[in-house]
Image (tube, rainbow, N blue to C red; front, side):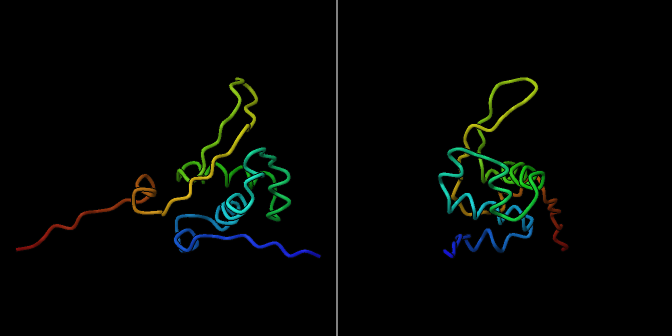
Length: 109
């Protein structure tokens, strides 16, 4: 039996704003470029050991964080994924700008 390893960047692994399933799917797509070229959500779900619905939610979450860019068909009712582009970048504060609420503290004299 062949053992398969997936790489996950340290800043992604340490990110508190991502779910474990999002991290797992990101590592899978990063390590398997052919899976991103012809996306099959059922195959991704089986490889990651999660449900198909969980995979779709993880894709949406990674899109929101701008770690994935998904090209879909232009159909009105059923939009199928044609291609997934994996963005390899470090996560900084800008990636979580929409999600976190930062309150500036006033300096006291």
